[in-house]
View 1 (cartoon, rainbow, N blue to C red):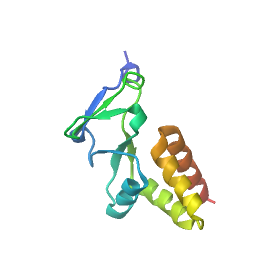
View 2 (tube, one colour):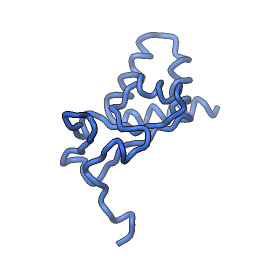
View 3 (tube, rainbow, N blue to C red):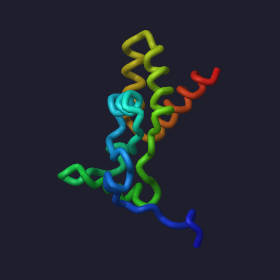
View 4 (cartoon, helix red, strand yellow):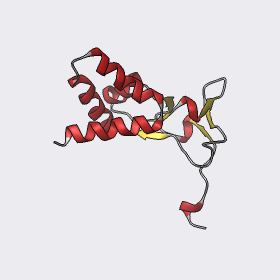
Length: 119
């Protein structure tokens, strides 16, 4: 069995991920951008936090397949630049919604941000 064949753990703690584990929101990404310290992101449809907020557990659908997604300051800066360039509030709200709604839409937002930054 190779490392790639192993299932990912279903439960993660803030200690597992430097910078902690948080729900993906635009506010959290802007904090990564401002503080220059990355963190791990998760989405509400993927699982839940323990009552004390210290432990994240993936639900059955995602356990063993997903892990918290690391957001680094450079990617956060690209997302912030894209967001800041938008003029209309409805477009800014769409970006905030895509970030928080699910992992797939977040990945698409990151792709759009990098495409805009590398033109």
